[in-house]
Every structure is written in structure tokens, then in C-alpha cells.
Length: 154
Ligand code: COA
Image 1 (cartoon, rainbow, N blue to C red):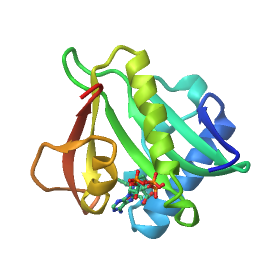
Image 2: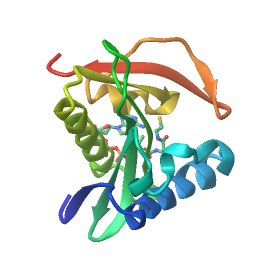
Image 3: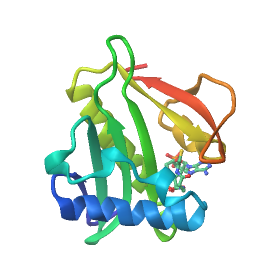
Image 4: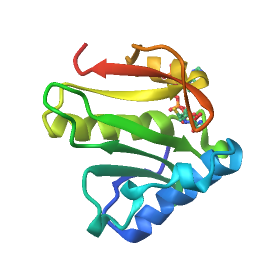
């Protein structure tokens, strides 16, 4: 992918870029409600703690995003969520780039791995990044998920 820039979100404008992608993908495509999708971790980065958001800009267009809750209890992995790539940008490595940026951030903070709830269709995507399924199917926002995790260096 040429002209790809990854940003750790630090400004309200970047946060709005992340939310625009999530609204298009999760609310627009998947039918999740605004109330379920947007929470207290999606505020102005200047006033919001406990979370890191990443946005991938492809030729200047905000095209992919994801976030990680950065305060995991001792011995547990931090949780990644809200991973989304605009439909027209899929299959070009943007999802992988967002995940690797979040992995880097987790490693920088001293974590040994990360965990997430994967929509069933996305399990093969996460498997390409080394994730292993670790739980049964459950419903979140009416969508079937399974818990997965990866240990860095494994
Ligand atoms: N099934 C099988 N493999 C898949 C896949 C799928 N649905 N989606 C991606 N992959 C593979 C790619 O082939 C690629 O493999 P490779 O490294 O061997 O070449 C690897 O995963 C990375 O793919 P990438 O191009 O980075 O994925 P993407 O940018 O299309 O993003 C999603 C993948 C799942 C994030 C994207 O499809 C998306 O946003 N879907 C809608 C939102 C969603 O469901 N998010 C996940 C919530 S848990």
C-alpha cells in the first residue's frame, strides 16, 4: 500500500476521523446502534484516558481504525476492539497495519500479548496475525463473536 500513514489519535479531529469510519462500518453496514457503538472511551483525546485509538490514512483519506483499552489488570492482556476498514479499502493490508500499530503500542507498554472479541467472519483475519480462539460463541450488539488472543513472540 503506497502513501499509508498510521496515526495514534491525539486530536479531536483524528478522533472524528475514527468515528466516521466506525459509523460507516458498524452502524451503516452492520446495523449496530449509535448507543451501542459509541461509548465513554470515544471522547476528545485531551479528556479521555484508558484507551488508544489508531487511524490509518490512505492517500490522506481516513480509511481504517481500531482501539485498545490500555489498563489491563496484572497478568491479563489489554483488549483491542472496534477494528474497521472502509469497505472500498479492504483487502489491501490496512486492517493488518492497524493491528500491528496496536500491537506495537501494547508491547511498548510492557504487555505480553493482546486479546479481543472477534466477529465470526473476521476470525481468519485475526488468525493471520497469530491469534488463537479461546472461547465459545457469544452475542455482542446482536452479532456472534468468539474471544481470541495472541502472545507476542509466539
Ligand atoms: N477471511 C479470510 N482472510 C481474511 C479476511 C477474511 N474475511 N479478511 C482479511 N483476511 C486476510 C487477508 O487475506 C490477509 O492475509 P495475508 O496476510 O495472508 O495476505 C490478512 O487477513 C490481512 O488482511 P487485510 O487486507 O489487512 O484486512 P482488511 O484491511 O480487509 O481488514 C477487516 C479486515 C476484518 C478489519 C475488514 O474486513 C473489516 O473492516 N470488516 C468489517 C468490520 C469488522 O467486521 N471488523 C472486525 C470486528 S471483530
